[in-house]
Length: 126
Image (cartoon, rainbow, N blue to C red; front, side, top):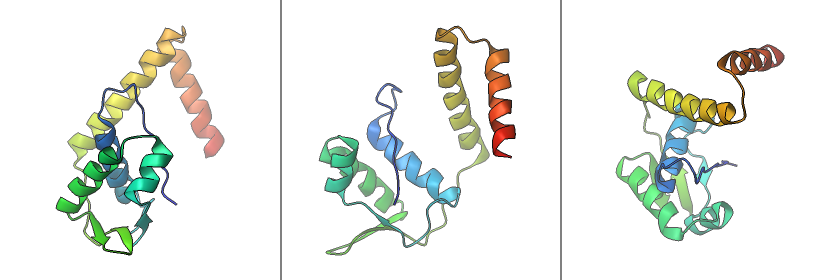
């Protein structure tokens, strides 16, 4: 099952977050062609957002041929190859890091402490 996480405080429109998570999920190999997505209604309920938010995201991805909706069956990830250029990837990572550092700094953590914790976490999963 595909899992979505929306950040209502990020300033990024919720439909855009859904689009990005689907695109990055496909590129990372987390989600495969043919995998079924939740219905618009089910995802809207799960995420506690308006139906139009999910519908807009799905429609944009259908236009890009990333998703296919089959009447009566559901919405699926298509066979199309999804690519994200390096500039976009780095930009996304920079945004995530900036937000993370801002939150951690507001609690009084230094960059050195943040870096040390990230390295500890990486060593723990390696």
